[in-house]
Length: 441
Image 1 (tube, rainbow, N blue to C red):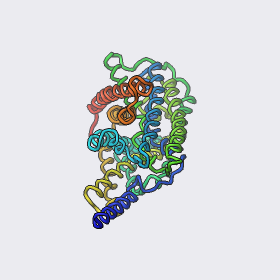
Image 2 (image 1 turned 90 degrees about the vertical axis):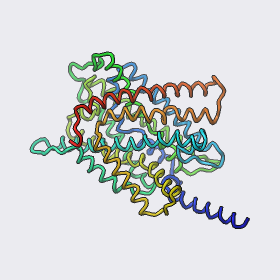
Image 3 (image 1 turned 180 degrees about the vertical axis):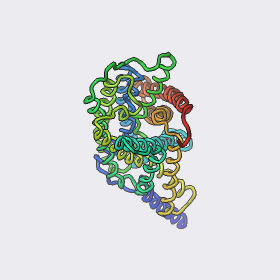
């Protein structure tokens, strides 16, 4: 018996050491406002800049309804995730897939959640590489009009990636709090610049609010694509549990209190960023608005350059927030499954390879707004709109036709529609773009 207990102790000790080394579980002393700005950084993505063009494909009525509905549904599913983080007394689900395993079983839970989560997080990182690169290029093009060599977006993406080859080596969530705070402030700033500059510009002459495409099929597919873009804008749920894992918790004061407070503050900021940009941007430019609203606004120059710079800083923060759970997964597999020793060299190698991979993909496929709607519908709709509801039904088993049951089913049906329709529109747009696109140009 003695040998067995000592073995168990050694295993537990090793487990604890590994947990303290992994990025998500290593430090649990975050305050509620950490969760507020981590949430803002994760939520207010570069997706906000695509909202006016989504409005142009949706039209006034449906557009406003869909924006508000998405805000309400995703806030509700966020609340579910926060509640479920500690529903088993004395245990915390620090990662999305651990909650999945609780709801769907050990094997199935992993297979349902992990692929979705990876597509989301790696997808966001790739899109953000493109965004960062494009914004740097915008700055360059705006700042020098005459005698300038035009530099390919490819090189700007490489410049942007160079930052991440350094920052990615910060060990855990709490150590990127500074980066994340800067990013959250930036997202408010550039959203504000985007809509105030639009107001300043005034409604354009001959502004037209009808749908861009003349054919019915074109209108419908653009509508689908816009749904995907909206889904992408409201996606911050993949990292919610991982953020909550950094907050301390006791039975008297569970972590869901401060986390929910942070989430609500975060969501109010999200509304302040999203609604003015989407509505005013569309009101000013009508259906001529570009896929990225900052492209439509060329003047006042200094302000737009500043906005692009803010986007770059924000995307640096967001990239890290989405990369952290991926690093956690990669490092868990390396240490727990392949039994590597948890060393600095291991972490350095794994993270460098990941950054290089996202950079390479971004350089290969830089169709920014179409990628948004494709990934948005395909991977974000499930993790944000309906997987939390399915888990809730599986775990709490509310009575049929009770309020909770109905709400969850409505969310699931809307989410499924999003997941099926969004990528169709995005894929069509990608195909149209790819016809005229030359690789590495």
